[in-house]
Image (cartoon, rainbow, N blue to C red; front, side):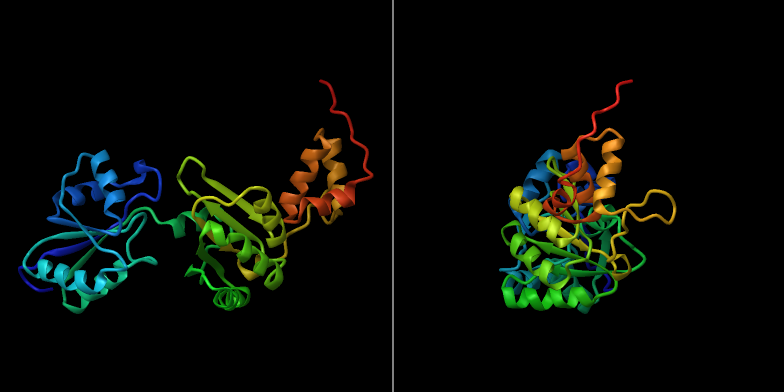
Length: 291
C-alpha cells in the first residue's frame, strides 16, 4: 500500500435498529477525518444519536463522477475516510462499490468494518438452505427486464436473494405465480424495525396475502433452493400424507377454531386460504374441549 496515505473504511451501519451498530464502527466513525455518506440526513441522525461530530460529505449515485477523484485525493493526502450507505454494508447494491474499486486501483488501503446487512439478515431468517446462495440485487423496474430476471431465478438451483420496492411487489408476485408457482419464498420487510415481518409461502399465497395487506417498507425476497420447491405435505403417522381436508380436520380435533385451522393449513402448505376453505367447507366445527 502507498506510504503516507489514509485508509478507506467500509463501515456498516444499522438497517433499522440503531442498537445493531458495532462498537468498532462507532470508534471508527469518531476517529476518521471524514465520513462519505450516501444519505447525509440519515447518517447525521445516526451520528447525533451517538454524539459523533465527524464532518460529513455526500457521496451517492448521482455525484460519483466528481466525488470519487476528490475522495481519492484526500486519501492520498493522508486523510482517513469512512464510507457509509444509507443503511447496511456499503458496496452492496450501492455506489460504495465504485469508490472501493477506485481505491484499490490506486493501491490504497481498504478496511472493512463489518456489521448489519439486509441480504444476510433476510437469508438466515427465511429458513432455506444457506449452503450456497445467489444475491440478485434490485429486481429491474421494467416488466420485461423483471420477467427476464425472474426467469433466470426460476432456473437457479441455489437459494436466491433479491430486493424489491413495495409499490412493485404485487406485479413481481404475479410474475412469480406465472413463472415459478410452486417455489417457496420468504418475503422479509422492515428488517430490525418496529414493523418487521417475514411471510413465507408459495407465490399464490403471498400474492393473496399482500393484496389483503398493502405492501409497505422495503422488501427482501428470498427464493428457496430448487430442492425445496416441493413443499412437504403435513403428515399424521409416519408415511401417512394428509389431504388438505384431513389436515384441517386434524387441527379441529386438536381444538383449533375453523378459521384459524384454515389459515394455519394455508400458511404451512403455501396455498391460498380460499383453496383450503373450498376443500374444508363441509367440515363441521368441533367445539374446544373443556379442561
